[in-house]
Length: 490
Image 1 (cartoon, helix red, strand yellow):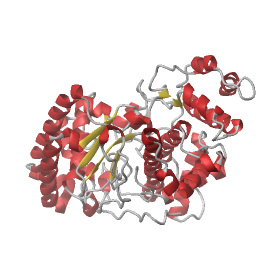
Image 2 (image 1 turned 60 degrees about the vertical axis):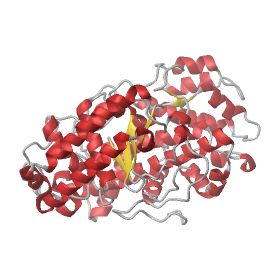
Image 3 (image 1 turned 90 degrees about the horizontal axis):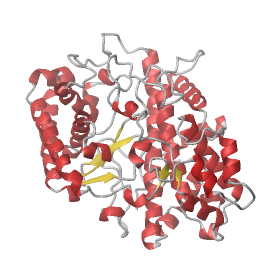
């Protein structure tokens, strides 16, 4: 179902948005709708499934290089999260909301199960044991048991505040970011002067790509000249949690970056990300039609490549020595190594795209509900909630948020709801990784029908969504159907 008041995004156009509301998010900036989000994981082509991100290296099919997003899944700062104990207790005891205790326990169980799936819990006790200790008796919740299961001081385990998730760059980080932005611009200048490289990647669209490198470089320089006006980041660590690598919007000249990109934790990848986002800033037709290393990335048509931000990463990546396709000539319909695109490739791409759309919509939903909660926290403004209440309730029912279980007259987005949606976004990314390893199903399926089977199987293999195959698939399909049609953050 498409939200009737928000039309679908058309490729190459700015995503439609509601008129601006008065309450700004943290940092004093209006959060624009997400035109272009670089996804770090989720649809990457992998050679093995995901059981434990902390104990297994997941590699791209492309030999010799691990994708940054997949590497991040093994990093110590990437974990599923829980609300602060005080927020959880408030949800349980709020006499106006009247959320049934069973609903909260179910939500906590789901979150702990997803964390346990990735070996991210402090405690080694089984999840049912942890839940029984945290909720020792009807109406009771134990902070001591909560703190034994999770580290309350660890921001990567505990969701602290929505107010730090969309904010300006700290002065301590600004100088380093400006250097990275200049370096990225220099890489784009070199790429635009590489006639042979442009032809190898963009073919007959080389001249168009050359001009877009130039416009992207100009836009990036303008953003660097006034970071407070053009760039935001996330110090609450929402982005690495949900595999969001950033976004940029041509119409507003706004860009949002991971804190690790801002800090230059991995300089080559920070620069590649900046090139990607600068490509969006520089031209309104540059969209996300396929992320770096996704199925058939190198085999896309010339018309798609020249309008796809990730392809603008390739020549700078070659200069940085982190390309997965060094020396390769991108030929439409032909994979690296010379093989033709097969039916399995086509079906996997359909399945991968479906889950990419589900992830994208889940990420939009996360930023949207986070913005609704921010409005309530900062000014007790209930307008964003009441305006889209019907859609919020629909999302709540599909994803097991608590809103539809609250007393209708006082319903609102709680911290627990924000974390639930954050966890759903993360799940979409992990399921998207799994689907790229699914075999072609046997049977007289159409390509779309076979892809649908692959998606269902990947959901089952993940196993920690809602633990009901029919509801799990319904949630994924609901999200995919709302791709780029959910309300913008207030």
